[in-house]
Length: 415
Image 1 (cartoon, one colour):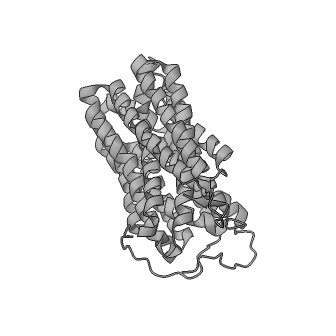
Image 2: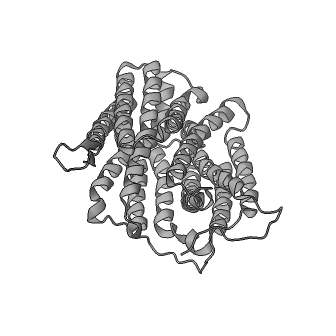
Image 3: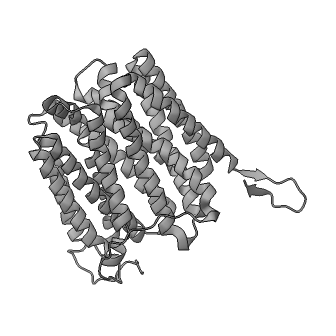
């Protein structure tokens, strides 16, 4: 299937490839921006409708499962029908999800809105991520991966921060954040309508599951990437579902900006660290990032035990930086090891792990938070994930290039 940029006649109505590249990068960021928008409102929803922490984490998990279902069932659909049609459908559905959020008057509406949002986000991420490579001026996978990681983390953090600002400072807090989101999606939709179509050979869509699989030659780097994505994305899921509650407790405030500060610190430091260290060797990124992630989580455990807001914020910043660098380093290691013939099935397996990591630990935390309490729950999960991150660091360190001392052997070899 060819996905080179289709030749088009010069037209003022068609976006130049560089502008189109910026547009699809912005769509990835906007999709993650939308995923974080409801987080500052969860406390308000709980007060209005009286649901438990478990229900809250299930609402969040509905989004993650929706993304996963769309990636597995329709991850390659933009290869068949084109990037632009899929993005148009996804953005329209995301606009519909914001309308459901605006009209929500019970927790059932939240499940429906998050489900639609998850499915639409999965479609948008699959098509936009592919379009990034299509439209990149040099078709540089490393540059595309760095762009994807930075806009994803930045979008997530800004979504929480902007939503918290609206909720705290403006009227109609359950409506205005979604009105702003609707407008942003409408602008993106208008841009996609003018985007050049990168896919030349198109066919009828087929919704066939993309079977995950890991060939024997890739199992070791896949295991490392899977451990890294589990340790990093489970932290993100925990922060998005229960982080605002812990922030409000530790800082002893009902201010939504303060409550959302930890999520913004986590995602913002992840984006900044990826920019600073995104070009480092993959093994170094996975090693150093995992150590930083473990350090940040141990600071969060200490903060929960001592009820220190300052230590908690420091842990979110350090852990977020580690989260960004560790994930990017492990993903780059895996990408370099996958044979071209197995790329789709291996990446499908990778995303299964990623979105399971985003949802299942958050659900488990929702189950235990009622009998244990909020702070002990973060202490337990933070300690376990910190230990896992250190395992990732040790395994990544073993993959570093080493000098070969035997005569006639290359100067360096990869472990």
